[in-house]
Length: 243
Image (cartoon, rainbow, N blue to C red; front, side, top):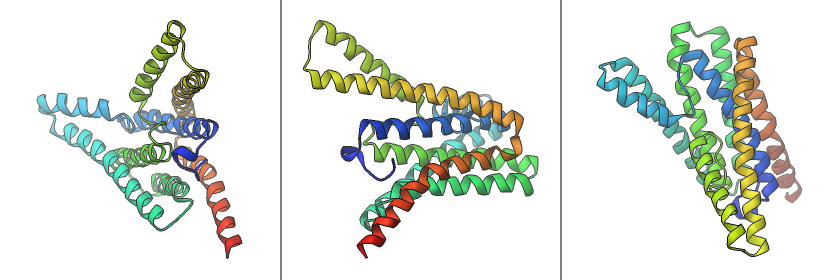
């Protein structure tokens, strides 16, 4: 799922990657809100909060909302720089390493939450780190799929779904060739499934975080590691066979 880029990817690979990462993003987003009151993947909402609380004179809340947005941007920036560097070096599993790095940081945050953070520290640090990771994840999936898939940007996915649905309905009155119609149906299915997986992940995140809040981040990091490691191992095996 994490070794081929845009034009070389199949519809099934995009669907599997988008759906699995959307579930993780939904879970982290909902659990983050339950924990600290911020949506780590919802930058539209955070920017709106920034504007509204600034007018109300709530400087501390405005700074936090702005910091969350900044960390999301930094995550996307760093991820893209690492991916560009990896591609320049010919690193075949660069996207898998990006997701593995996200998993590693999640596990570190989970361990810090267990053994180090005070409640006040968690409220300050956790949303910033989670927003950074969501920026990384969204940039990774956007780049590898050629902007076909986004796992944290539900607004964009729903917009894409509306566009694809309109094109599909139009095709009944304005017949199109079979290949284009089939591609349209696949994109409809892709966007629908990712949105549903984000919703399911959000619900699952609420359930798991409510039941086991101390181990939630460790579990999420483990899931991401399981998604990334097969690509890392396959690339290592290919590299060793060439040498």
